[in-house]
Length: 450
Image (tube, rainbow, N blue to C red; front, side, top):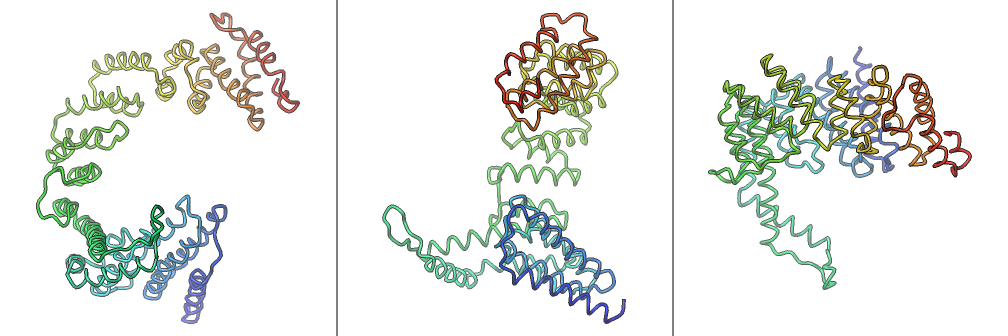
């Protein structure tokens, strides 16, 4: 690529970025995905340029990530894909900075400004992105810059600015219909709180860059210099436990996890506990944690983990107990999914014939794979599941799904040729007659199903 070619490419990318900043066109939800691809195209062009001309690419990437403010102000980013393109670009920014041989001082100034003026959260991980550029000296300088934000002069300047801004908004109290006034003390308290939160987040990022879990723990309670477990949120305790596990500090992992409130919806603490117990060679306790977890979730993946860590004798005993637990559960869809995933065909058939009426209408993604698995060996059980899906579609009256119901009816007819005994269930002829009677008042379009 000649110098002229480089100039032309840089000029073209600059125009695209300038267009992003100038435009006032609103990007609605339906146009967001195309716009996301457009943004990625610009980002990819800059990344490609960085391979041979990193300094020019660095300047362009800075302009591109800065364009997010004007873009986010005029788009519906309900799916988060537009912001994702900028977050990814910010990750690439640090890599390009390394290629461009950006100095530590320049990186500190840039990262500090981006992290402290992070209105949309796009720069949450900019410190991590520039880790290799900042190196240890730069991270230390950055830490000092963050802490200096709590100086009296800085707080006073921002307090005055905050009060001026709030007063200009003329916010109304809806009850008294009077303009709300903010005292300097109120504004100062708000400023200190905002600055402290930003410093806390910055110190966390610096600690992670250094893989310093003790510094991370201290950052979580900034500006405190001493702490106890009650000073931490459960989400922080979990993050701390994860970082301690990475450092092989398993005993401390368990201490932090023991201070958390139990949450049956959150599996991460259980995974951390099991990993820590394994690291401490407390394998029986780890296995018991898995079993308790399985009894709570009926998860086939946890079942697989238990079997992988079990002796042959225990495997047989546990499988019998697990199947008994699953049959006794009132979570029929979960039980059905377990049997399908584990390919327990006979057990699946028994479950279907005993609890098919308990399957919810939202169980489609469990029911269809189960029906397919049962067709050859247990045609009656498969038929009951196909009927479940047919009744669900017909009951909702959504014609766009009628083709599926028709195919399932035809499948039931084929399966009926393999069924000698319907037990307590209706034969195919009886079911079909009842179905026609129940849905005879449907419109002509709906009658296609019958």
